[in-house]
Image (cartoon, rainbow, N blue to C red; front, side):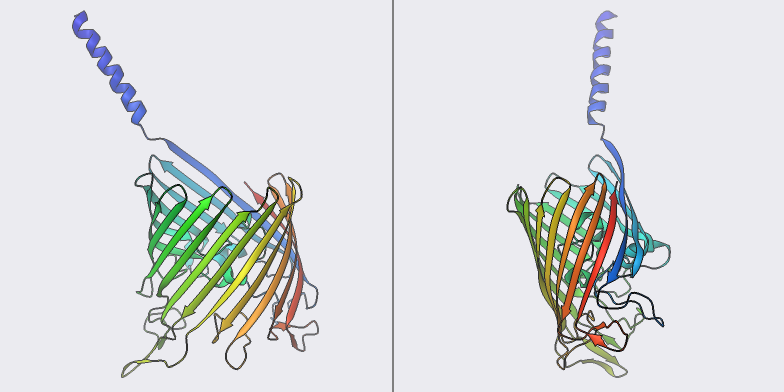
Length: 381
């Protein structure tokens, strides 16, 4: 009996040890942020007047006058072994602006995706994720400046589809994706699809990412987002380069440039389809980011951006010359004051356009520049 019993005990012990060793690890995390701000114009009005909103830079977020709220953000992630899921929820004006093409209850969903780490070098993701284009992001916790750039505001915010990320080696990475039209998070109303790609290079001192997007963004939608519209724009192509380097322990240099063009497309008539004989429209720009840490709790940074629309562009500036062109140069100086998990961001911004796009102080005319002050508080948990 002893000869039989001992091998059985050893076999049971080894089997139990193997099961414990092979059991996938589980992890659940909750993180997020809350942000509020106050913004005041120095050379224009600061109130609502006869249903006119106080002028602000024609960029996303941080555009309300006086004391205002941004958003509350809650990110829940769960991973077991080599699979996982992320649910990123946003509440408040900044969150609503970020998911503007969502409807109903899902307008609080900023990201919602599941992923599978096929191997150490390949990850597949299905769902909705924030865009890979541009230097800035939706969450204010990851941006040095609180207000955002023109290039970020008129590029994509999010994508819904499937993507594959590849770690080519220790320094190079790649991504390919098939997605719905830009910013249609819940489903695809247009019946067209967009291709995305990225090539990345990253080391400890810095990184660079070359991004591409190509596809028809509206199918045959009309102005109300319904299928069967009279006019459809053609395919959009965007190429975007983002780079950053730590020049020293205190000094950081970032750079972003982008070019976005959309074919004029086709007009749909009772007798068939005809081409619209006009030039492509779009925008391009470049921005430089300079950031210097004076201490562990205080840093100072500047963003200088030039943004140009052609043939009507993206409708950002709203006033154009005879050729449909308009440009703006914007300088934003921001401080980052760290108080534990709370970041205070005082900011001075000057937007100077080559067209009179801003309302003046007396509300009786327009002007080409807008100067504003901002103070934001961003708490990250």
